[in-house]
Image (cartoon, rainbow, N blue to C red; front, side, top):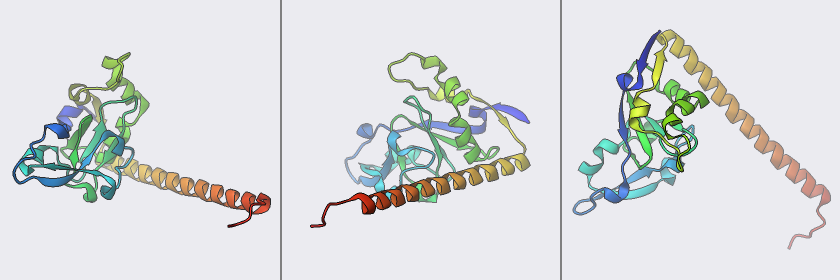
Length: 194
């Protein structure tokens, strides 16, 4: 298992400040991701804010399939893998694009970046700051052990199963809450419908 720096595995780039993008002339509308749109997945494309900008000014900020979007400000490090629906979306300030060169599965990198030990390593330089965060230099300096392709496949399958389990559990809890609420309301409510 090789250990490499993230900068040797991927291209890193910072997000755009939408107020600094040129909008005169033939500006087009683009969906834009902000820091609040990144969790373990990305906010639905239809729910994203839109910006007007010249096409040439947004090219380097546009997402491609399998990019990893990472929040670079705030107490948590959130990371998500870009799917086909978000291709061409512009990333905003306080976000970074990690474009892996093929040696590591994007879903594994996103999961690794969300780990507490990784967050601590990234935030080490800004400990005690008013707004915690990290730089692209710190992100690129992360040491990452790259498992064999076979081991990566196993880890990706494990993460997919864990994600499906979490979704099923969340849905079961929602259904339980709905059933409990409905039962209590029907049993105890003396309010008349108007």
